[in-house]
Length: 266
Ligand SMILES: [Zn+2]
Image (cartoon, rainbow, N blue to C red; front, side, top):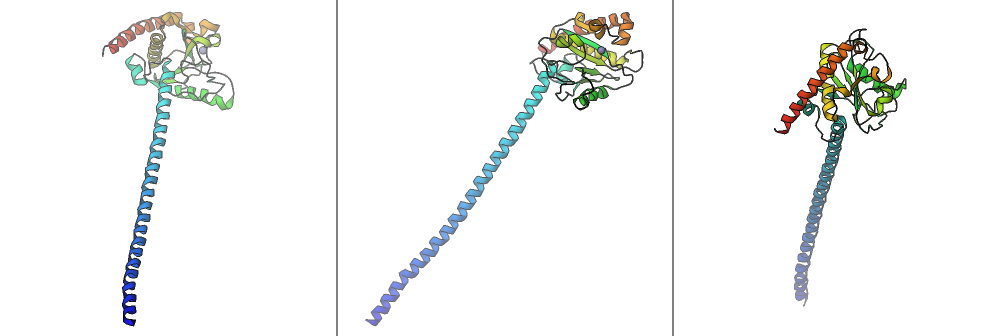
């Protein structure tokens, strides 16, 4: 009996050991499962993080693209897009777009309903560069010195900086601000005569703007023609020089239309 009991005990001990080992196995399995679960959670987190990163980058890229599209759209004044390289193919000089920070002193963001005139000005500040003029407009946002600005500034070396989209008003041409795109030109001395490079650029810029807004050289005016102000000085004091500039703009308009027509068939 005792032996039987022992046997029984040993017999019963075996399954107990088996149970223990299976319990251990179960425990081991559970640990494995937990580990697997952790790995799974880690992977899911990683996927989630990657997803969020992707969304973030996409949002940033989208915002960037939207900003670029907005810049080129508002810069052209039309919805045809483009950009400095495209504009050059259409006959424009290279335009360095450096839009002013919107502010009530130089970029009030008042819409121009329809561009009817292109007005030429001189800076009345001999030797000053296009960049310096643009930065002066930009600083008015904090200095509040006066209200003045221009859509474009043409520099001493013919460089062109755009400060304001052509769909918005600038503060340059008084009563004509409402329907006029203004161009300020830098000059070397008190005569106000434009350097060759400046002259070439302003002719090309004015002509290209005319093609863009369906205007002719007759719509290119001087500040003087609006208010009687001696601006642009040299081209008020020398009417022949002004007539010549308008003739040069007229022939450039024709050249631009040919360029633009050819682009259409490319
Ligand atoms: Zn002027």
